Length: 524
Image (cartoon, rainbow, N blue to C red; front, side):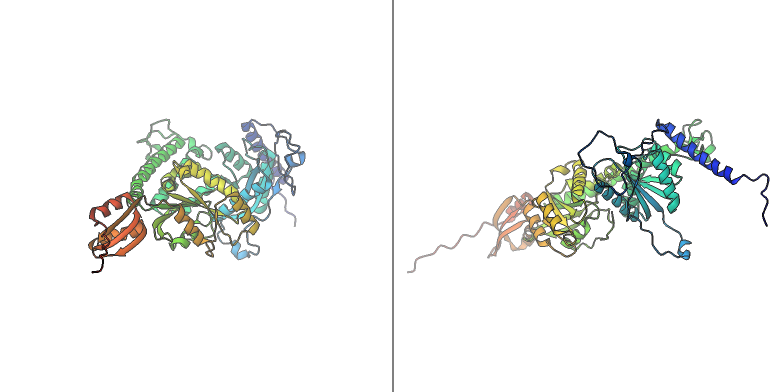
């Protein structure tokens, strides 16, 4: 039986046209805010399945028509299970994301490496990657990052795959994020917010948690936004839940009140981090007083720094094939093949486009690099772009005061996974690098020998007899110095060694002169 539509019910065609008109109005509003025009879509993109452009035929910033008309679908990013039953779909799902990247410089291979790294970051944060888009464009659109037409195509893909979040491989301004969200109608975050979220999940120590929270608040402060007029309410008198007392009185809006609360929290976190700094400085000062050399392990995230620390010291640090698995620095004691003691410090991993907020917040932790006598720069030799990783790490180290002055030893890790020709090219590119595999133990002995050669040696040479009751000084000479010769004589332990100035002074204060050799007398 055919049902007669209610006279007041809207016509389906009219509802569809109204929805389309509403979407067009949103796009028009965004373009108007960005100072663009509808006829200038500026949606330049990489031609699907095309090869890299050559340097020949370059004509300014002009792109071919085919590139301006297409997005490139990056295959192999999805992490969704192929066989998911209906019962499993009823369970709570993780965030389902679509990745978006721009290719404005370099080659398409480099742009794909960056987008695949973003996929690994998204998985580390607990998301499920459904798809990814890479657009060829000379620069981000000021209104929607992608441009009006490509933002609409992204919205259609988001609806088609059922995503609830879009992650952009770059840093979005507040207006770009708002504009892109208005078009795609799902949550939009950028690479910086994703990395900050991963750090918040993995921070374990009190200092690490405070550092990450400070970085998050610094990122959030200029990006506060509200829905409708909720952030424009005035909070005068005793309105807004009693927030009138302590506020600036009538005229202060909710967004101003939230900003003031964030600034107050940031000031408190800075004080807490400053109060924690002396403890780390005291530990470093104790090692300096005992003249124990220090070695810092730095490198790109997931390059194998913690695995190398475990292999050299047996530290038992968490090892996981995951980005930023360990954040808090770990200090362990090790010895060189000739018996000298030194410390190994595992620092936080770096990543391309590391947020400046994190670099500032983790400055007290990164000072371990500047205070070291040697920097072990661990490189993932099996990565598609190891040279890009080296450039990124060196850039971050150079931003640390005194970091550029620390001697560097490049360690090409994961030799068991890298191709021989890639290893040969890297050894040519970085002469003096050591090839190791922290998993199999390949090259670890050579690395230990190179560390012993590069560590600073004690400057004072002593040759004296230490009385037997002062065996503690002999023990310090064994642990902190370099023993050249040792002999047990009647008055004590004859010690010929190189030690630090402080230990040399202590030894000379109690040492006995070297016994003279008996003079041979002629037989009668």
